[in-house]
Image (cartoon, rainbow, N blue to C red):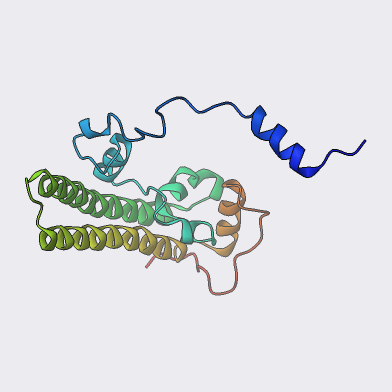
Length: 185
């Protein structure tokens, strides 16, 4: 006996649980209570702490490790004292700069909230605020990406390969020629 694809589709649809009533009608219910409407508590905390938030995935997943994770794996990567010190300084610089930029993002998002709280939000002011937030987020992303470039230059190709393996990005292979030379700048 052959069951048509149409009947299978109907049966599959009937087997799906029904969505909770009203769930799709109020997807943002409760979010209006957030201190900064456009930011979750976690995102605001990450911005204020200078965390990476995935901003450097383009570098990370293409074999350019960042300072935080290299420090976490310092023993496994057999970093020498000069590498540990240099990467430690990089991390401190990156974090301090990221905290400052993150604070500005949070402040500007709060200002955007205030613009919309006005009885008649001003379109030009909103456009300027959005452009400023976008530029700050771009600066923050570039900051994190740039520190991946600098960190790469402090590691040997073998350390980069070990890093990739330790982070689960594939088998340990030496990094392509020209990546890192193992000497701090």
